[in-house]
Length: 353
Image (cartoon, rainbow, N blue to C red; front, side):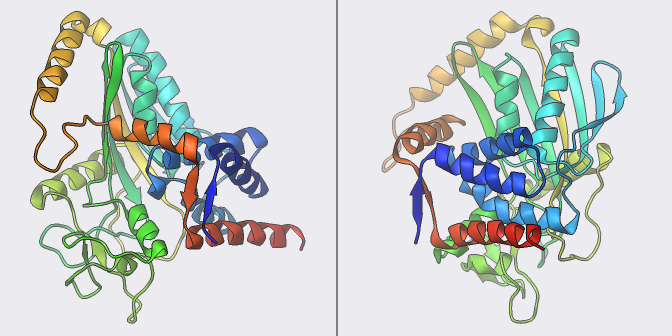
């Protein structure tokens, strides 16, 4: 059966599984909080549905519980950190905490984080920065089975390579732009496949390079053992952004880029290049806030397009989803719930040997 479960009960269940996989109670709670927040924010693709993959990655040795960042370089405004295959919900937060501290001190900080396990919703890290009055820009690459085709190509060659920008807006809610450079996130295809849904045209190609609306082509191997691929957003423009994320988040950070045949490993490694700017130290804080709010007001004066709900700024849909789901609970589809239960049983069986 499908489940509608409260955020608190879901956190408890996920924390229990992560702890059974070897994490300390504190680490398990932090990972669970992050995953459930993704569900609350309307991003089920980055939520608790990732738990089965995390469990598999731990059992395979590709994800290392109770591992934090290792400092490779710290010059103040420049940090080079190794995630050491630890949970991204831990290493990403540690990297941001260090970067925020340095940016407050120096006015800017560039953070290169390499070899982190799945960082999850990158918007979480931008929200950390804007809460401290900082602007943040994030470029991320993905080292896992390549699921996105280059523009003009017919198979997967890289990951969904997200980009995220966070901008504080004075006493108003912040601007948080968080997007995959693929037409849609891979995790959303997993959710659609588990629900038995088709997706709109233009999202996918099948294992032969032909357009399809079946999300299963990027979730499970097809009859010939191959997978289809996601397409980039905006044709060549999204492809260019995806390559920039690979070069900056992967090559520049030292995390590495994808340039080999796919394997069946369950680990998902991310590299993330983050740039943090303090408008106060830059000396533009007053003008920055005035102009940012004026522009937002100008946008909202646009009349509603026919059939639309009017202008929405980045970050607003997530905040609205949190309010609604905190009240009504989080819905988990049958297949995802069964996968989560199976992952817990797998760990219980291992512990009884």
